[in-house]
Image (cartoon, rainbow over all chains, first blue to last red; front, top):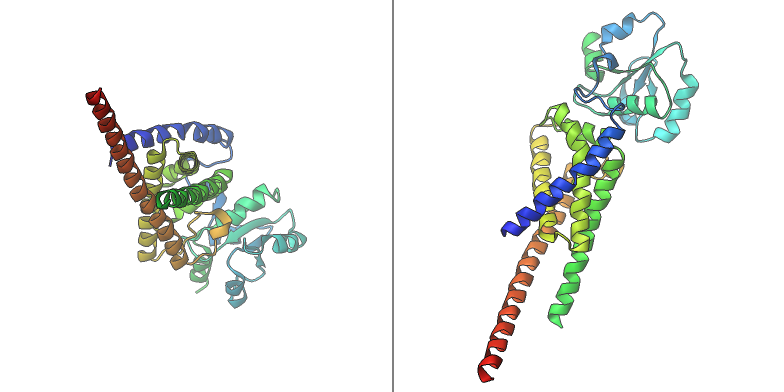
Length: 142
Length: 162
């Protein structure tokens, strides 16, 4: 490989910093820079159960998994059918209840994403992600 | 004539590969938080690095894609895109081996439902195109050097005659 290619690559690598910095400044208050979800956004099964006003459970898994089994009373709301399911969710949503979103396990991404969209697109405030997802619910109910 | 048609083919591949990376970069630049979550799903890097990369990598892809299309800092752009593809391929295979169920995030929502084999096929196809562009760039440089050398010899010959 010619040294010219490396030099050119270094120029591009440096140039890319500028728009990235600009975007990071624009998003500075919308991103959690230190952890994927801030501690205040995550709840355990026990914490959610202890809330006296009750919880609106949101199942962010695919429809087939929801149909197979889900937390009693949970509402299906996933990204696959977001536009169709969001109005149905909002009909059942009540402002005094906190919303807890879950997906299949600790490693899944869907719950965090649905929670983020509920905050940003639907303007809801009390939205949380269930730590450990469906797996932790099952373990807690064994 | 054959060289001319080959040059057109190279340019078309330049435009396709560059266009793919500009598209992929633009989608991710529009939603860097989501891309950060996608990087984090690979469980390779801590979140603090994943989220910073999510702001940086899309712009690197866009600039490298533009370099290919406009042939400005061309080899640098090609080097970056090839390296990104290799890293991405390794990360995808590693995630599969570790049994992680992930969305790659390469093309935003468009690639959300791609299977592992579809990801792999697309990545390998783009990597093959990048390798082809490296080979063609090398042969282009070699032929331009050879024609430059011939021209130099020709001018020397003329001087000697004079």
